[in-house]
Structure formats: structure tokens, C-alpha cells
Image (tube, rainbow, N blue to C red):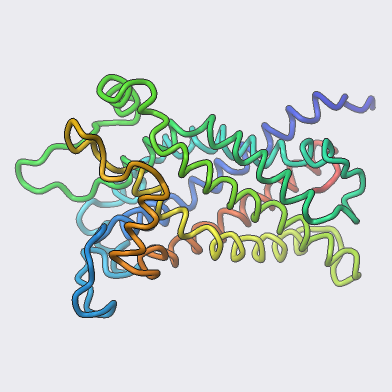
Length: 310
């Protein structure tokens, strides 16, 4: 059988990585909704009596998830799913599928001895490009997921995914769809500069030392390590991204945060370091399974299409 050319391989990798990531998003969407609610809970509210006495509507991951289920039903845990699928069809397809081509452009010709800096650089470049393309879908996803149980007399901010795109473009301008792009790019640089490179590095370190051999077990162990690493490093920028994207236009003077850096320092000043790690558990519980499902399925699809493993 004739081998596909390089261009076809890149397109195939983009399609396969997008497919695997969409699958992971469908599984982890309830965790993502809970994470967003926790990150926005008591936003910029200064604690008076310490962290343990902080009155929060969603008091932790389990209580938060059960409260969403009780008040909004199963549909509440799947808010923003279509936007999430659209996001991963672009963002994850690019950041994962284009990772190896960028790594090769940096001179990485042997996956077994590629320097870590080249892996990190390739991950950052692919992640940044993917995040810029997917920002509108990411914005809509967060705003839909952020809306909780409505009180009597309240109406939904948006009645659906397509309505959200149209409303934002109409009232905030087309550039409004790229609100929070600075925070999104920073998060993508951190996430993609950690997740894919750490998976790649852990996997080939285990192979090089003969600890494990190519196969599903190796993919699972490597992706578990990558999921933990990215959750630890990315949580603060994920909180900032969620808050910047979810903010409303306050008045003619603009928004609550003028930049991702202002959001970061305001959060740190009023809520302390724990404020930047709000929603860490669901973030980890989402990123861990999401990373594992995405990369394991991606590796299996590559095998089915006769493409060498990552």
C-alpha cells in the first residue's frame, strides 16, 4: 500500500486528534460545568473569617455537582456541550494534531531523544494557534456553563449556543467573540506546553529505560502523569480565563477586568492564593480523564490508520 504524503498525514492527525478530544469532552462535560461554577463562586469576595468559613453557593466539587443536578437536572451538567464540541473540534485538533509537525520544524527527527525544550516549544506554538481559532466557541461554552439555577423573574442570558454567538456579536461586536483571548492564549500556552510534551516525555522515558513497552498500558500511564502535571500548572490561568470570559459589560466604562493580569492580581489580592486554585479538584478530575481518553483514543486511531505512535 502506498504511504500517504506528509500533507495528508498532517490532515489525518488533525482529524484524529479532534475526534478523540470531542469524545473526551462529551464524557467530562459535567465536571467542566462544576469546575466553572466553583471558579466563579464568591468572585472577588474577600474572606472575613478564613477559608473554612467562606460562604459559598457551591461548597466543593461533590456538593457543587449534586446541587447543579438537584436544581437544574441532568441538562444542567451538560450545559455548553455543543460549544464544547465546537471548541475541541478546532482547538484540540490543532494543538494535538499540529504538535508533531511543529516539533519536526524545530529539528526533532527522532522521538526517542528529542530535547524537552523542543517538545515544550512545539506544544506552546500549536496550543496558542488553536486557542485563537477556538476562542469564540470557548467564550460561549463558559458563559453557558456559568449560568446556574434561575430565580423567579430571571431570564437566561442566552437561550442556546447559536443564539449566544449571534447575541455576543450583535451587542459586543465581532471582536467581542474574542473577549478573553489574552487569557485564553496564556492558558493554552501553559496547558499545551505541559500536557502534550509531558505525555511525550514520560512515554519515551519509560520506553528508553525499558520500564514499559509500546501499547495501551503505556499510553494510560503516560497520559495520567500528563493530566496531573497540567492540572497543577494550569489551574490559576484557568480561573483567570473563566472569569475574564464570563464577565459582563458593566457600563460605558467597560468591564470588571481590563486584562488577564488585572484579573490575576485582583483575585490574588482579595481571595488569596486559594482563590487562584478554586475548582482545582474538578479541574484535575476533568483534565485527568480528558487527557487519558483523548491521548489513548488518539494513539489507537493512529494505529488503525497506520501512523506511527506519538
